[in-house]
Structure formats: C-alpha cells, structure tokens
Amino acid sequence: MKKSIKLHQKNIDYTLKVSKRAKRMRVAIYCDGSCVVTIPRTIPQTIVEKFLIKKSKWVLDKIEYFSNFKGTYSKTGNKRDYLRYKDEALNLAEKRIKHFNQFYGYKWNKITIKNQKTRWGSCSKKGNLNFNYKIVLLPESMTDYIIVHELCHLGEFNHSRKFWNLVAKIIPNYLEIRYELKKDKVNFY
Ligand SMILES: [Zn+2]
Image (cartoon, rainbow, N blue to C red):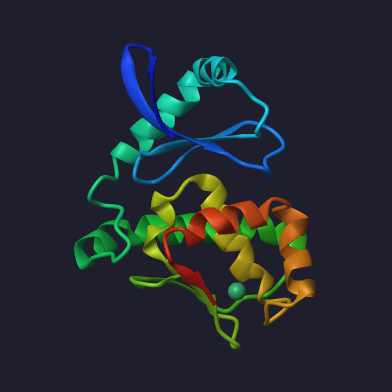
C-alpha cells in the first residue's frame, strides 16, 4: 500500500506492508531512499502514523544519508568510485576486523579492497580477505555483517550450521541483514 506522511514539513512517501510474520511494527529505509513500514495484521493506521512521527528524526536522517549516495551507490560499481572510496574502505575493513577479531582471535593474511560487481566480500583458503569498496556506502550494521561473515570463514571455510553459529555470536540478527542485502542481488562467498 502506498502512503504518504508529513514529517517536519517534508512529505515522505512510504510503502505499508502487512505481514503475518511480523511481531511488531518496524520501519526500514533502503539505499535508494525508499521507506517501508511493516506491521502485524492487527495494527491500525493511526498507530502507524504516530510511530513514524516518533521516529521522524531517524527516518529523515536515513533518507538524507542515502541521498548523499545517489548515483554513487550503484550495484554495478565503477572505476571512479572505486578509486575514490578504496582507501576509506580499507581503513574501515581493517578497523572493524581488528575490533571483531578481539572476540574471534583468528589470523588473516591480507586485506584487499576490490571493485566487484556481484560480491560484497570473499575469503580465500590462504586467509586473504577481500571486500567490495562499496562497504563504506552501506549502513553500519550491513558493513559489520559483511566483515563478520568473511572473518568467520577463517574459522569455518563453508556455510555450515557451525559457520552461521559463529556469525550469530556477534550478529544475532544476521538473517534479517542478509535478507536486506540480498535485495541488491549482491552475494557472499
Ligand atoms: Zn560466506
């Protein structure tokens, strides 16, 4: 259902989705700036509006954040953006790997930033970790998931239950984040 609401004098269009599985109301802003509110079946429209008004700062901040990447954040990537963001991406990857590895305590070989069309990250048998430069353009929770995912491959070089249990120790809601990322049809290996 397409809806619209005024938040701080701004008209915000959003999509209202009624979900049988949803246990509570939630709002998501996607990287194209679109806003989606998901609600359980029992919640009336007036509550949705109150919820959005309460969260208006967060909603507007997110939309603003993604608007900075218009044209930059593309699924295919390009050379110019790669050169522009690769150092920043490497810094971020190193920083977050060190942070999460305080927990895991793995050894890695080399971290490389790549300009890949269909991968967010990969891990080689030699322990080299590769990341797409676009990790700097994602919301923090998604970047962290990508980092933790590849880091955990240093412990489990597969996608077994054991692997996902390792991921879940740091990112308990990894399924949700993975689902959001998959919408962009960019994969992990
Ligand atoms: Zn993987």
